[in-house]
Image (cartoon, rainbow, N blue to C red; front, side, top):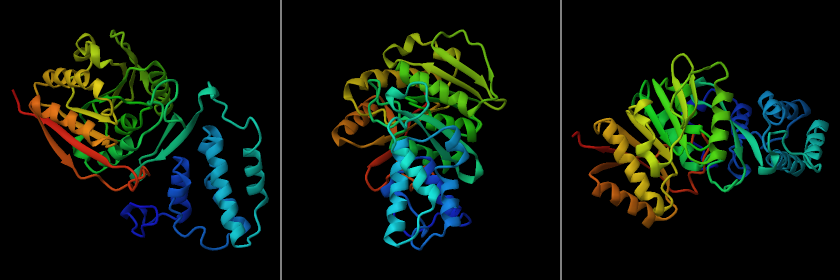
Length: 352
């Protein structure tokens, strides 16, 4: 759905404009893409400005787990500009917060601010709670692209939310989990029997483990003999694992001791053709574990059509069946559906 599209999703009908703006702010929706739902089309008195601040920069989640100071400053600057264009008197707190954000050194009290990590908060559909993630604001950080949530991961979450029966109660393996948006969403809302989130970069795995613990503070640790599993938690309904899974060494991973997947999910892992042989070997290995009874749900940002087509042809040659899914509109996870060509595929194989 485009930013100025007048259509309102069904689940937004009973929510106030302030609540809808708050949701978009908490997950750092780019300012140009925020749907304001008429909130700034008329003058806001001081009480209304205070309510807007309480729902955004002074939201309890932001106080505990702050968003990027740069993003918050840009958000406040936009509001100030809109109010100024209407000759509306600014609330003192609005100006104080904005000026404070501009002070040198106003960044985040995180473990390692040198790599620009901050938080984003994703309010989930249907009152299912909130996912809080520590992420990087940069596309490439610490030599990896895995420290931020990409558009395809958000599109994958939209797809999951519209296909509940395909994921609820399943054994799920996620490849290239990054900071964990899709995997944590599945674990929090779909009660898989087990979900294993995997990646292979040390910084990504560290952030992923921290995010899993943050979102499941009461989950109990579980011992695991597999040295590649650095975190295993039991939430009562779901067993959640974080695994160092290098596709080049999949046969040595002892993955079968941990999970026999019903479903594999992944987002934005098809971008480098040099990785395709290892990825294809990994898929062959995992499908063999399940006697070809699992399925693979893949979300891609199509940056280069030839690269994606090369991977799809490799799958066809390896006797996989590919079904392209309809991409759900951006409703809950606020990705830019107008700027990115997202494609989602369900991949299966005939039973052996």
